[in-house]
Image 1 (cartoon, helix red, strand yellow):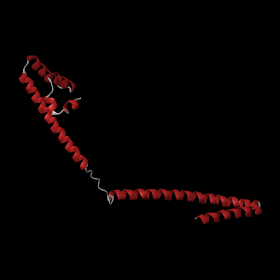
Image 2 (spheres, rainbow, N blue to C red):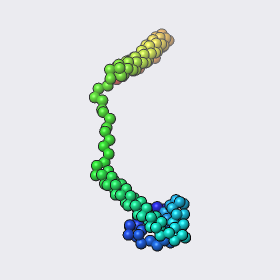
Image 3 (cartoon, rainbow, N blue to C red):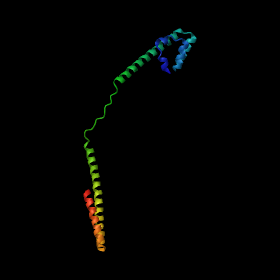
Length: 164
């Protein structure tokens, strides 16, 4: 609301009639003290006070123009030279304590993998023993079937060996 009033040139402000001045002050939301002072000066016919208020208004307008010019200059400077944001320093090497912690975590992970392998190997050995026991029982009961299952077991071992 104030921009419209303060954007007027100083010549336009000087040429305002009293009613236009009151209307402009009302539109821009000027304080009641200024409005009352202008109204009192108008009703009293006090031309000196009216001129004094006009001078104050012109000075305020000049200050505003100066401030707007400064803002414009600063905006131009900002557009011409953007704000420099320094990037955070990139670490080429991790601190020693972090490297130690990572090594411990890797070792822990490796230990877990070794434990998992060990468990699987134990299960495989136990199951293979059971398989051999079952194969021996089949061979005793039916040697031909035992030979057939023995051949199947050798084929499985061969395939497993090939995958290693």
